[in-house]
Amino acid sequence: MTADLHIHSTASDGLMSPAEVVTAANSLHLETIALTDHDSIAGVLAAKKAAEGLDVTLINGVEITACFERREIHLLAYAFNIKDEGLNACLQDHKKARIERAKYIIDRLGKKGLHVTIDEVRAEAISSNICRPHIAAVLVEKGYVATPREAFIRFLSDEALGEMQNFYRNLKDVIAVVKQAGGVAVIAHPGRLYSDMQLNKIISAGIDGIETVHPAHTYVIQQKLEQLALKNDLLTTGGSDFHGRRRTYYRHFGMLGVNGEDVEKINRLASHRK
Ligand code: AMP
Ligand code: MN
Ligand code: MN
Ligand code: MN
Image (tube, rainbow, N blue to C red; front, side):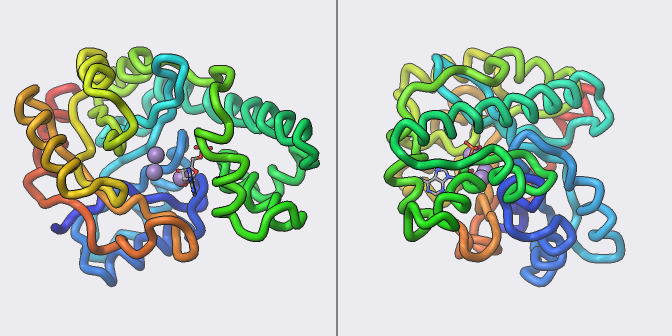
């Protein structure tokens, strides 16, 4: 394992700045990393700058939210052209979508007697994309819950929120945007989230790879996903989904990932698209 292709920074809901992430990854002797912030590439250039002179290499990355069968789905994109207009337009749309979605969630919380304002959530997110952990942090600050974990279990998890309005572009459109930008599209942490039939639909939508290695995946799930990738001639990727210490999965940073060969395959496919 030498590459961690799933990492968050303060450009979305991570706790460490892009430069801090790079320094930490270098100390852990990771050779390749991808910063994959939610619907944001705002941290990528800063991370690349921080990596200059170090032994760690950055590949362009982002975790894009999309709409699939009226649910939100996460798609990892790698090795795209960072200046691509179509990709940047999509991320701009999603930045706005995240504000509208936060207002919608706040409205629902209000009906349950939990009073939060969009300005409080914006202050928590600072200038980065608004994500649910920012809302969770406000709920903790205001004393509605004791911990972010409790905020998710009771109010913010997919189960607690139930079906929501769709705020994002749909899966097929997002895959097309990523490919047009010369990038590679990978379904993020699919383990347990989708039925076999849904997974097949996601593959048919045109993804290039499956994130097989992820802290939420058991060994059995990982094996099953590897078989599926093999059968459909898809790339396999993985990472720790690190969000900084104190957030979910932080223990896996430096422990979970893929090898240089998997990174090579991503770069090779992307170079054919440019
Ligand atoms: P969003 O992109 O706004 O839907 O927020 C998704 C993020 O919320 C994930 O990337 C995690 O960082 C966090 N998250 C989602 N579900 C949970 C959960 N059950 N417990 C803690 N954090 C969660
Ligand atoms: Mn996150
Ligand atoms: Mn995700
Ligand atoms: Mn993630």
